Image (tube, rainbow, N blue to C red; front, side, top):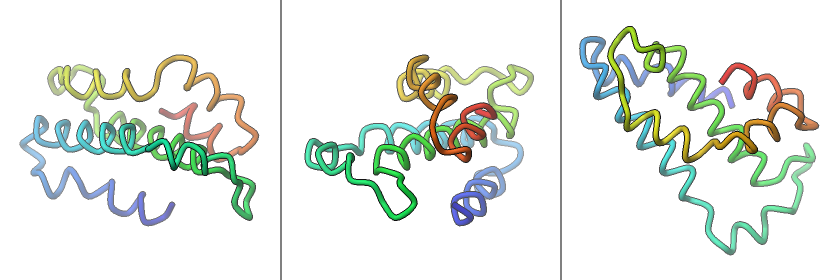
Length: 118
């Protein structure tokens, strides 16, 4: 989780501070990749909890919320730096309202917190 925070915070620097469309495209691509990564075999294994009692799907949920949170923190969703429909669509497709509600009432306080911040 610390690796994600380290890497995600550098996307804006790598793409360029003056290129918000490239940053938005990067976040949209990451969100779509994570959202589409779950295969039927992984879905079957998704119910097996880790030593922290988290399943594969819990980690996918956390990852999607964290990506949305970093996109929002980079001011890509507030409309002041421009609108990025591709990013908005990727977030809406990957995190529908029911999934957001599931995150807000999740047993893990870490997932609840990042869902609230997303």
